[in-house]
Amino acid sequence: MKQLSNGCILISFMLCSLAIGSGVSAQDSSVAEPSVNLRYFMINNDLQFLIGETRIKKGRKFTPLPKQVIKVFLDSNSAENLIGKTYTDENGKAKLIIPPALKNKWMSSSKHKIIGVLEASSLEDERTSFIEVTKSKIELDTLLNDGVRSVNVKVMAFENNSWVPAKDIEMKVGIDRLGGILSAGDEATYTTDSTGSVTVDFKKDSIPGDANGNIKLVAQIEDNDLYGNILIEKKVPWGISLKPDKNFFAQRTLWSTRFRTPLWLLFMAYSIMIIVWGTIIYLVFQIVKIKKLGVASSAQ
Image 1 (cartoon, rainbow, N blue to C red):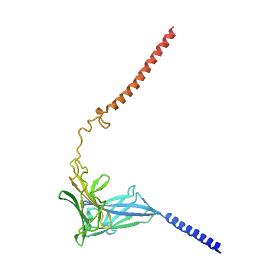
Image 2 (cartoon, helix red, strand yellow):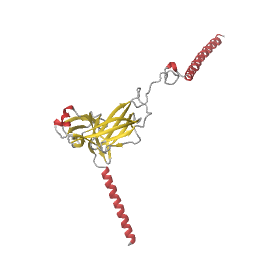
Image 3 (cartoon, one colour):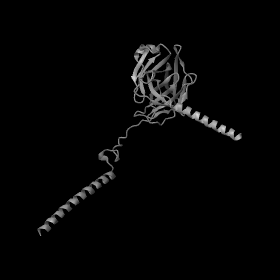
Image 4 (cartoon, rainbow, N blue to C red):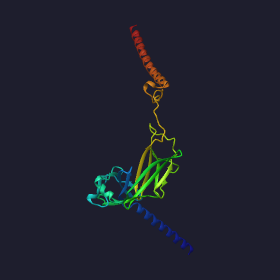
């Protein structure tokens, strides 16, 4: 009876494993589901635009869905509220700017619903998604106290027809560089206090700037549930001036002009030319000499 009981347990375990495996396989091999995703952006409290992204879910993985028609609306799916209609690129993305015709409607409310519609195809039905965006603005200022430079950022939200501080908002505060935003202080991100403000001590005093020593300070909020993506920039003379070296190309280096070629490189090049042409000339003289010897021997 004990052996029979152990056998029943083993069979039950195998059946459960098969059931779980078939369930996971069925989930991973489910029908692909297309979708449209929206992101809101505002730059320097002026330029507003949207990024629509079409993608398809296969199992647990999302992949871009290019060349799709999407329509984006403000607050409701009506022709007068159409922000734009466009095609996504090869990466499944499309950019739409909120038109001036909808400015009054945008200003009339503190919160808006932005609706994205992926048009139906021969294989799939129409897909819809939306995001809600609260009107906001961001201010960036610089401070100098006892020789210490600081960056002050303030985030405000429009609620009940007035601007109020937006607290507990995480953001990046730093310097715009080619690879992204270099933090102005010691932390990677900073969070606003009850007044909607955050102050960061500037600790990148030796950073290179342009020819006039200017750098670009940046404060950026990324993918916030209420405000979306907000960025503000300000140019300040806090960097080290980079002036071109007038004698840089006057030296004999590999990147100089042909008249400033390094001597060792000239020696190698001319040596190779002399050896090659010397060998060719020597061979020509030898051929002529052999030909004369042949003519002389045939005359005798």
